[in-house]
Length: 372
Figure 1 (cartoon, rainbow, N blue to C red):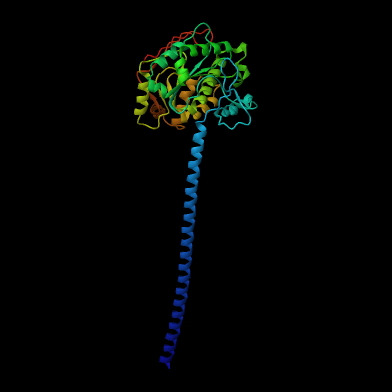
Figure 2 (spheres, rainbow, N blue to C red):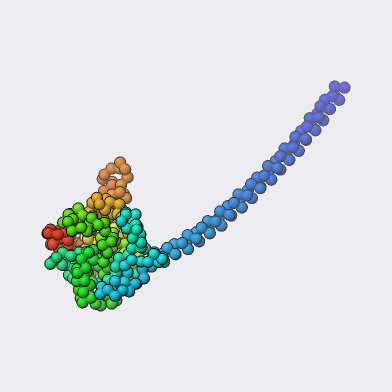
């Protein structure tokens, strides 16, 4: 009897174990099915994300192409009967030409109701797609002018191939129309070949661009206002030149260039191995001989416009290099070392300052680049 009960107990345990095994197998099959379904969903999700990524990349590439086309599109000429051949003044409200000058409205409130703005083009073929744009701002210095000497030096020391791959832009930042006429006449007479080829342009900045306080006669001898206007002069010229070339070189209207300066500058730019350079100095004086990548110009202009009332532009240029490279609370020595790495200096300098009569009324200056 006892043996029979034991056998029944074993049989019951066996049945329970079999039932539990079947239950476990069933649950495992369900789990496996769930895992398989989950894996299939993951794979499907991954494929969907991959398709979206590819579509996004294609859209991005198309957008870059469109922006690139817009970036290199220059405002169309609008002929007028003016003796100065002004081709572009105020673009119509209905025109869709990409206008980089709209950024000025964020920093100069008086321009916000002005519609679309653009400098006046007095002379020029609106050349674009070149390697180098060279910018020169000029204002009336009374009986003292260095612009003809500067242009002769800059243009005569290019090879024909270099002249073809560059554009020199003279920006007349003076509201006196007589001075503009004199510059136009001089350029047409002395540099007719370069004007006809498109290698030389003259633009003028309408008075509309400036806050009225900078143009009032009673403030023309105010050094602070002179510095403020000078920053705006450079910013406007940079905005105009930015879509035209790969690199932008800032010059002034009272300098001379070394022989073969252009070849040396081009060779040096191509030899710089670091891709992190911020700008290259081909002169240690002020804002003369500073070379920028055109794609970086908008960043510089934004910074200059934020602080255009605070400091001269050459000081702001040094500030932006410090801000870019120096972390808060970091050691000064490492900060200065990093700044030297992004601000590349070329020696000997390729440009010399020759003007003694400053663009600031009544001042004489005898600054010389000792590395020239």
